[in-house]
Length: 96
Image (cartoon, rainbow, N blue to C red):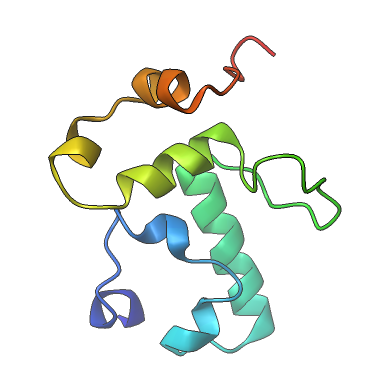
């Protein structure tokens, strides 16, 4: 109910994490960890590492793509994953 009450759609789900859940009323730490883990699994993104080098992007490729898709408009609606990888000049993680 707090997701719909706060207008969190599938498009905005990428922005929901341990930091944002208390802002929408989820304050139990176990619930925060469980919901964050389930969202990452649902979206197919990895957990952010606290020791990640600042020279790397702040998310994996899929996370960066979903962040871009979270915006509205014709560009975001028509953007595909392969177009995003090419435009962002990222190395495809399929070949890694």
